[in-house]
Length: 493
Image 1 (cartoon, one colour):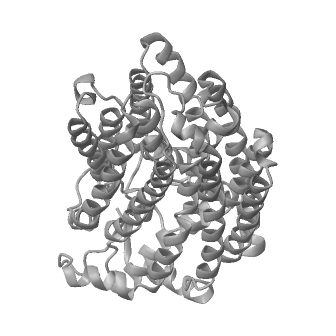
Image 2 (cartoon, helix red, strand yellow):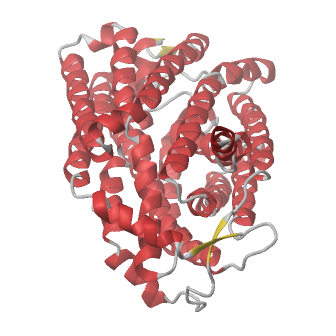
């Protein structure tokens, strides 16, 4: 009898298929959008949009900087809007998650499908791209996956499994996205246009991601809500928002960790495409698009496989070392590999074998994979800590701080990469897609800059991550006491 009861409880929502599919699946649109914006925004404007390369880097830089200025004001406001919203029959945060999905889908199509009349005028391009980039920003800020997770369950085991399936989904998405350039090459051939080829491919991926995300969101239930009789009904004030960021010790540590940790992935991938494309798949500046697109499938499969393995090893590794120690150890491992890649490039060994590069890059990504689940857990725990210490969750506002940081980091890495490329006169012929003569003449120096961006800077950020993470406060007895008291303030909806 007890065995039957145990099995029944084990499969109770959200600890069942619908719970995990709902939570992981609703993040698909965000995962695809992040991959396209982080991995392709800069390279699209410089290589694939069919724009004059002399001013495409300037446009990208202006858009990224303006976006961050808007975010500084907009992200806290959007967080306040979500936290101040009333509970509806659809939930408190679910409507915002739906809005987020739709806005991001629209933004991708707009950014990567430039009409010809827009491309004819650089001011039109700037305005058009800025509008749709800001739509992406607004959509990303309305992503409510973290407060939704907190509303779904307080169990660390279930949250860990939710994040596990999110990472599995991200690997699958990464493998699917590896075919992006191959599909682009097909549509480019059929349309005779690099811009149209990129745009059609974006529409296909975005539409599929949106439909699956909306379907998954329909299975999400906000089961845990704050007991209104035990919590203040007052709307959050500006003073309370400031207190969240100044008094929440857990959030302060996570924010500082993310400040450096969040730069690792963007820097690794901001310059990766440029380095591989021009180092291994071009001869005298003439690029082999088909070869590069095909190898991109292999490269992504290897990198994602390394992440896949590390995710399955994360749980036993946490049991052995603990989350904090695991992040510290793997951060040092990433730093060693990053420095090794730079040394091999300087001595001329790395450029001779694309498989050596991919092997080391995948190994670095392997250790990066160990930190994703622990990092996701501590972000949600910082919201729990806020509820425990103040009586209010304010999950969207806390998350807004994290999201602003993530978007600022993506902009910083892209801007730094574009600035470095511009300094070395990077340019691509808008018709053939090959390097210009000025860029070809400066390529050796530019390639050194690229390897520093994708390997050395992430190595430095990894060391800083390890140092800061050692001070994370929610551990041991404090964690147990916090969750025991939180359960008394929650009611099942």
